[in-house]
Length: 227
Image (cartoon, rainbow, N blue to C red; front, side, top):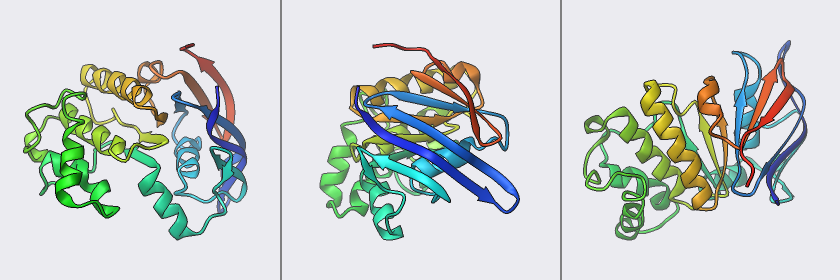
């Protein structure tokens, strides 16, 4: 199994607070990793560091073997648009746009004409159980439907890695389980790896690996899926 994304010896401090204290992590091709830990453990900092949002104080982040943590901000921004997808707790969909344009937005930001971008975006609606909802605005969608649209948006650029930060945190348990099952299966099916922060142990078990973080250190890991 090839490694898509890796961090080695990652450190990060904020004043007197140590968020990461020398973390090593690897994410395999089409694999899913859940990062768990109590509030303030460093799990979100780890996700943001791997995603090129936060620059580590020490260590390295590698994407398919190429070091990226020392890239310029402009280059990192382009990387996040073109090779990473993001799913957030509250979806962060634009309320004034219909669902299909929310999904197409990353493509249009990269210069794809609107008509072509929307046509490509529409292809995701049936696989994600959203057929018929293309013209609905976020306010007309249920929480679960909105998160499915957010997943479609994350996958629209055909990313190497999808990062999900508490993607079920705003959903009830049944809907959250449904969404995370879809998120883990569809990323694997379409060739992306997944890194997800969650506080919910049940949600985490849907990933191939669970990483337990406390006080900026990895306390252990669990493997759930072998394929």
